[in-house]
Amino acid sequence: MKVLFNPKTFTGKDLDPETRALFFKTIDWFEKKGLNALKQDDMHYRWYDDFIRFQKEEKLFATLLTPSGYGKENSCYDLKRITRFNELLAFYSMAHRYVFQVSILGTGPIWMSDNEAVKKRTAALLQQGAIFGFGVSEKEHGADLYSNETFLTPCGDGTYKANGNKYYIGNSNKGYISTIGKIPETGEYVFFQVDSNHRNYNDQKRIVTLSTHCAYVGQYELVEYPITDDDIISRGDKALEDALKTVNIGKFQVGVVPVGCCTHIGIKPTRTGNHHPFLVPFGMFTGNDGSVIIGAPNPKLWMMLCNVMGKSEIAKDPLFATGADRLKNLDKLKVLISESGF
Image (cartoon, rainbow, N blue to C red; front, side, top):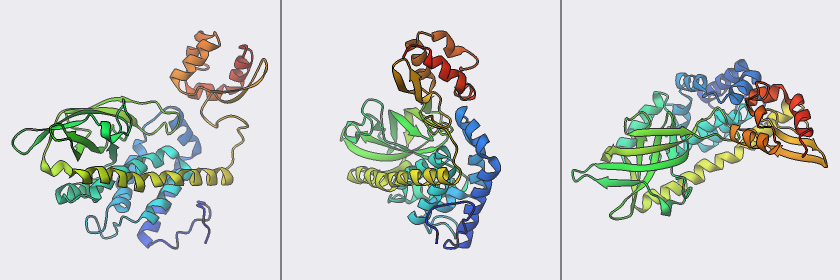
């Protein structure tokens, strides 16, 4: 049996028939979309609605991320199967893999929960094509759970109001987010689920990242967000423990990414020399005193580079205004940078 994924030789003979069919449908979807379209979407930061629709229609996440007993007959939370699907997605696109990766994190604490209401609701949402997120980190102190500043305040009638801000959260624009907070009076940790479509949920902004441009990484705020017992995933020490267990399960999948990416390079190599294949400028350039490595692919870094070169006016030049423009005119950009006096 071949170990590394290759769409040309993939048979999936070790998979059950329904899972194998899902893998082949996914391969077919990416092959039909094509590498050029994937690159264009990435360069223009286009959210992948087409892939979200595809996974909804084929019930990809529902089949792969729902434990037995909660979904359809073929649903099974099998880490081997999940890992193999992650490798397939990474082969074609890190960004498309990201929405699956974050949904693994978002559903992780739910399947470890003792709350049957939230588990059954999540299973139903997966069947409807929903995606999920993991609301742990905050801007001021990252993923330091002990410094968490999202709070659930008891209302006196068995319900709560959630207030707080989470930062660098995947799928925060469309997902159901497993969010961790504290009860201020007691310091007790609480994991609870929120809906990004709720009126008390504010998706504040999209965060520009150096990769996975089609994906959505954002910052959201909860303002007097109503929480009932049916929304609570876990509480106390279990909430803290389940957050760490979820990271163990979900972040392990990140290790599969370079396997898929490197396999793709070996099968479908593209000559890029010392430059990134689609992030521009990101590579080695010729300066006055030899070679210089420059990485300034996003709008903020590009503007900073233009200012350092003393050529702020080219930041908005139609030839170089966007990442796609700079990629198209890379040869001209190389000359411009070499003449800038580095």
